[in-house]
Image 1: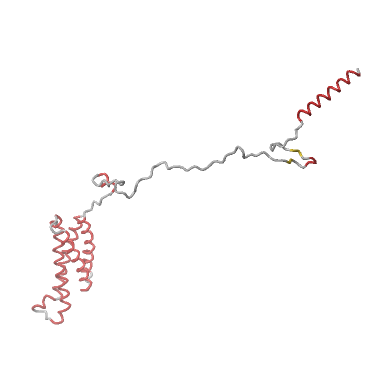
Image 2: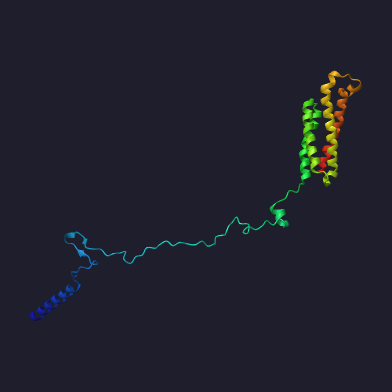
Length: 220
């Protein structure tokens, strides 16, 4: 019995010695090993190099998906505008359907209305002649612009020329009346500067202006 117990103890000691001897860390100068400090002071020694197998990614230069053009301002690189294409002209450009002649007529209409208002309200000679002068200059421009063109045969065009001549003669008559009336009698040449004669001429001009305004509005 005693012999058996002694045998067990010796066997146990050998096993324990072999176990602890196998796992006991050996002294080494390797940088990857860590030593345990006594008295609870933590680890000491050299830590492993964690960046040894780590490679940083280098930024790479990228190329644009599209290729650069030669020269944007080059005439060879820009396509011409398809002005002969009706779809482009009518939709993209949206051309003005109003003719230049109608645009000129519409600019003259307010002048005639102001001149008519001037006669109806019996404005003085200076105001009347100023509006008449502006109207006559507009008609002169119209006549030179459309001379020899189809527009010169329009009724509205001819009516404006006639009205301009009449307006110019009335403006001249009123200006001369203001200048010479004090020196002329109402007989002979002075009869033309009589107030009744001038009022009658203004009434004729008023009717002619009204007729012309109707014709110009019908042209639109």
